[in-house]
Image (cartoon, rainbow, N blue to C red; front, side, top):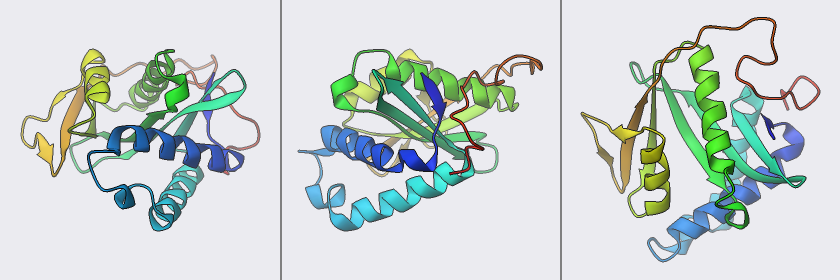
Length: 179
């Protein structure tokens, strides 16, 4: 099930993010750049702010938070930026990343967004293959940002379908979702 994140999800969101990052960064960059108390504190603060903005989706599998995605409005002309999409390694290859990705795309389309952007670590070949399979292409003007590849996705804008469940297909988590 994909749903909006709420403040009570914060610990699980931060844990999922840390596990996923360790899986693709370890052995490629120094551990202290992704696995230190300072990094974890910054990460927690950023996730808390994103949840408060209503810009985080969670995927549950078997009653456990198994994946998370976050997004924000991009720079001028860039549409939306997918800032995070992580699946806990124990839940890889179960369609959770695709479900999160598709929920983000539906939300953006419903909002009239026609273009999205993301950055992916150059050594994260699993993520690069995932994004390529979902239609993401190298950014035509700036294909790299440091040790990350910059990808773009052109979206077909969906017509709003009033009177059905959430326009982006995401189930409400209860409460007002503001955290």
